[in-house]
Length: 226
Figure 1 (cartoon, rainbow, N blue to C red):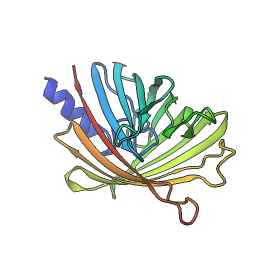
Figure 2: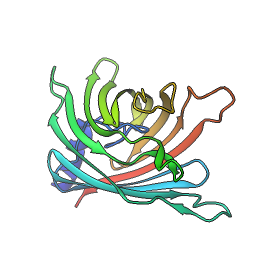
Figure 3: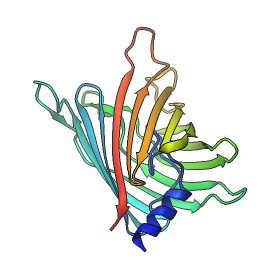
């Protein structure tokens, strides 16, 4: 019975991350009794661990915590506080009906800048996300509006490929970040194997200033039923 439920869940969700693309949230929720654990590595030894659990079939809550400089000779710098996320699936894709989820995400990206008291990449904050599959090409399209200090938005194209592989292109408009003249364009490649584990590598900030280095990230995650 447990194996059948997991197989049904995997068949009904896109091949992208169960909860995240490269950075942006997927408009889906864990089912009741399902858990998610993940680890993200980036930059100069930075890492964030995430855990989440499905309280009901449409509600997920979770937390994250991390820091910078875990690798190398310098002293690690821990983030000042744990962060949290919660989301509720309002609609689930069926026919012409898209996925629709509302949620909140306080975990930012690219490390925490103590001088500015903020994450380098701002969190999503409160958000509303939509997702719809183009069946003929197995392309999962996502749009979202989010609020952290000010209103912003994001868009994601997830191209599902045979064998559990996927290509991801996402854009964070960053309209709420006064220090950012242009948004963040990210590209990722993922592989879901064993119906439970996912490995994703991504390149952030393809629109960065000329001469700047792309920020590479590695994301490992696992989900299963209790």
